Length: 133
Image 1 (tube, one colour):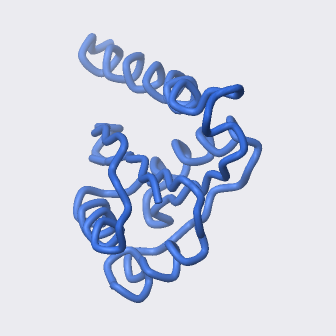
Image 2 (cartoon, rainbow, N blue to C red):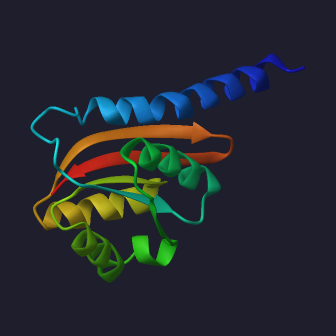
């Protein structure tokens, strides 16, 4: 057994397990954001992004929204997702380029970036972020 592959698997699964807990830590049940809605957006083209998003969404008792690359790479697609979110906090899990486009369009609409993390799961490089609208 190759130790590097084993350690990557252990670290990757540990990151997936800790991810929902880290997200919940930013949204305390009795805090100022207690009644605030959350929308979790995942890139549908990456199974790893969907897995992370499902874990996050389960922590909030909701289902993630799956968006394809065309939606995440266009102004109209991202605007439609942000319109759907309304005043909810948006958590996204997608590739680097899609995350950058999503964050820039959200910033142009007045949203603020609250958190950004980078993940390496197998061959996939993903970014997760939280935006306050």
